Structure formats: structure tokens, C-alpha cells
Image 1 (cartoon, one colour):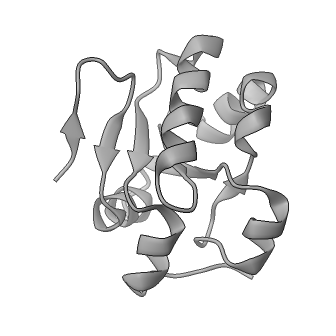
Image 2: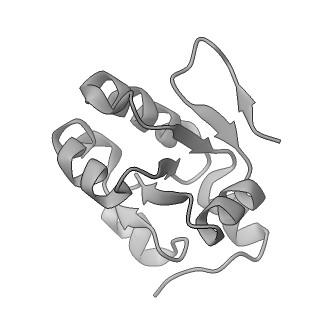
Length: 116
């Protein structure tokens, strides 16, 4: 179940909840890992924007989101939380931001679709 800590600019969400939001067209997902990690395995339909580039890629994230919610995913949930913080600091605080708990490891373990 999604959880919101008032001290964090994002909501924590499970991989199952993330998949549901994507399937319903409510959200887009941004993978914030490094390119070599992304090349190994990634969730289907994600956009790669490494965490260290999030602040400089605010326009790209906003354009990709098109007004939808933004789900950040990494390997296990740490860098995606940081990416949410960066995105908020860079001006995306008007969008609903989510951190996918467990990250790509949990996504793959749950048998959810991965991309080429």
C-alpha cells in the first residue's frame, strides 16, 4: 500500500501499485540507474535518466510525464528516493512523485515485464 511521509516529497509505492498506475495510464516511470545497469535489465516502458542528471533533465522529465504522475525506480529504492528529492528541488513539486520500493530487483522478482 502506498505510504506518504510528510517529511518526504514523494509517496512510497510497491511494484504492483506502480504497474497498476502504468497500466491505467496514470503515470510514467523514470529509471535513475546508470546506463550499464539499465542495459542489463529494466522495467518495460521506462525512460533512463541517471540520478546524477535529474536536476539538469527537469524539462525532459516534465515533457515525458505530460502531466501524469512520475514514478522513480532504481535498483532497490535508494537512488530513486534521492531522484525524487532532486526533482522536487529542481521545480517538479507540482507533479505527484513516487518512489518504487524495492526497485528493479523487486520488479523482476515479481515477474513484471522487462524491456529489451
